[in-house]
Amino acid sequence: MLVIPVKDGENIERALKRYKRKFDKTGTRRALQSRKQFTKPSVGNRVKVQKAQYVQRLRDQEAV
Image (cartoon, rainbow, N blue to C red):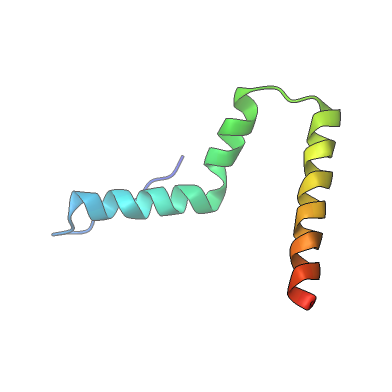
């Protein structure tokens, strides 16, 4: 659990923005979303391969 103290005179929106940024950096949200729904290992591997192919295609285009 993340605890972020609100500084004296700090706007509540600003404190929320800091909290959300820190929450995203820790990877907690991604972990929660991945636990929300079960994905078969074969599907996960397929997604990894597709992502690797996409990144490789981008790098190839950049090199040309």
